[in-house]
Length: 104
Image (cartoon, rainbow, N blue to C red; front, side, top):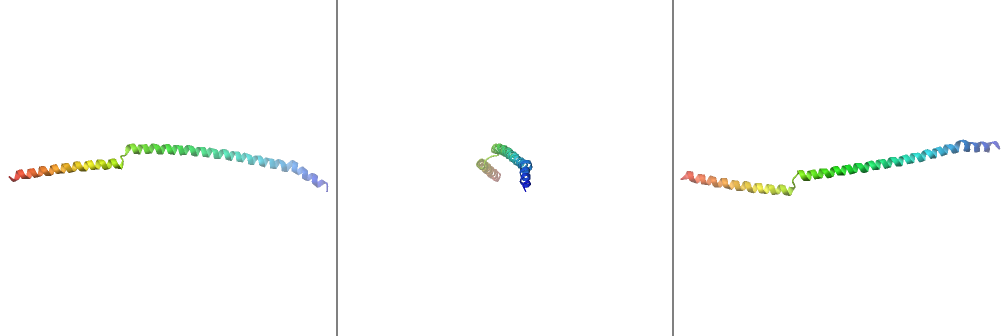
């Protein structure tokens, strides 16, 4: 019976403890690699977000420079309409004068 505890002690010291230490080391290494991978992904995401924000700002600037505002378009429309009405009035007046001359 005294032989059994010696074998158990040998098994613990020769096999079980080195295996558990190896597993602990592997687990720690996996955790460190995982943390590094998460940090790399977070850094890449921050860079991508910055790039998207810069592209959006550039696009907003392009739109602001390339397209007229609604207020400016309404102002141009009003001026064109007024000018066309003045032309129409002059044509009507010229037509009436022509009609009056041909009548006499």
